[in-house]
Amino acid sequence: MKTKDAILRSDRVLVAAMAIIIATASAAIGASLSYHPLTEKVAAPAPVVATAPAALPADSVLTRLLAEHRCLSEVLYYEARGEGAGGQKAIAEVVFHRMNVGNYGHSICAVVYEGSGHPGCQFSFTCNGELMRRKDGEAWRDAEALAARILTGEVRLANATAGATNFHAISVSPDWADTLEKTTQIGNHVFYRGGGHARDS
Image (tube, rainbow, N blue to C red; front, top):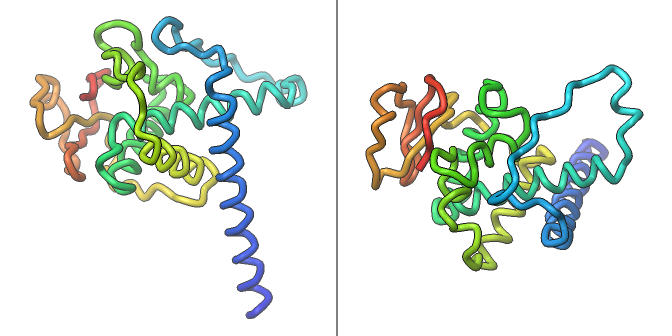
């Protein structure tokens, strides 16, 4: 029994270390990446080929992983930084549900930045200029850490939103809300599932 407990503790330490490495690398490299969501369209994912894993250079995989981490961190920060971990995990669920549906993109960045740079963006922070404002350092670090813990599996999403693919803040009443099935309210957000590309607020 003691050996099993020691192994479980070492696994948790390894996952925590990986989360810290991802968050640190993302913060250090993020500014140097050429990713500019306000001016570039998110590229469609490349088709999967049976021999593709051997063809991808390690630095390309790392760059994509860091970009995915940054996109998840951004959506957690901009959409729910005042909502605590529960509210941020709910937003992460929406992103992953959209990836599973497949109508919104097949990567975190594709989902988050769909329609960015023009009216009709899926997540309002990608098209309203909020990305240009200075971030709150502590809230940003918290979002990065939670995103890393989600990506490494240390924090598991429990489907608290019941399959939601859309949400809005309680302070607004978007016209699309009546066309979808309301699943729950978590903090200051109301969640929905079904329908097409309703915009989130």
